[in-house]
Amino acid sequence: MNERNSTVAVYPSHAEAEGAIKELQKSGFDMKKLSLIGRDYHTKEHVVGYYNTGDRALAWGQYGAFWGGIWGLLFGSAFFWVPGIGPLLVAGPLITSIVGALEGAVVVGGLGAIGGSLASIGIPKDSILRYETALKTGKFVLIVHGTVDDKVRAVEILRRTHSEVVECLG
Image 1: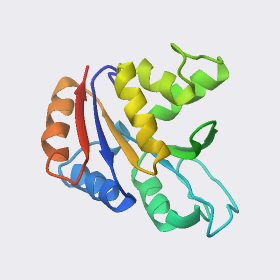
Image 2 (image 1 turned 180 degrees about the horizontal axis):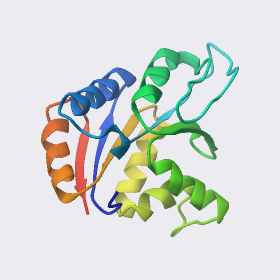
Image 3 (image 1 turned 45 degrees about the vertical axis):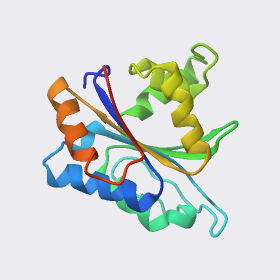
Image 4 (image 1 turned 30 degrees about the vertical axis):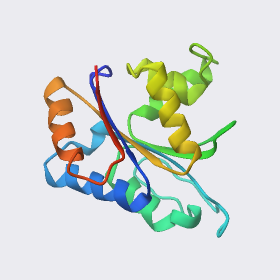
């Protein structure tokens, strides 16, 4: 994965994010090149389990079916509690960057672990602040990692979906 070639899209709901992932899948995109970040809401259910790569959680709160289905498509998953944002679920290659930031206590230019990991893949600080704000308000951030060709193809596909923002980086 070339971490500096990314396309980022923001979706207002889990349904739109899931639709975008399915569009990428139908277009033959490698699901291991996608990362998804979204808030987890445990207001209606309590978390009873969490399993990683290849397995699924028993309950994911309000969006249980959505997260369970997404985890089946994307590579790897993690749950983080991020100060100022709250509980976040992350799927895909971005997890490695977040874990690295947490393990090394890396904070880039005043950014926390999520912001630092986004910066590490070439996302500019002003965009990071927009994405963190989107996450705080319950939106979903989808990142397509890959080659320059992957990036261009992803932009074409994601612009046909119900995204609020599509940004091509790298």
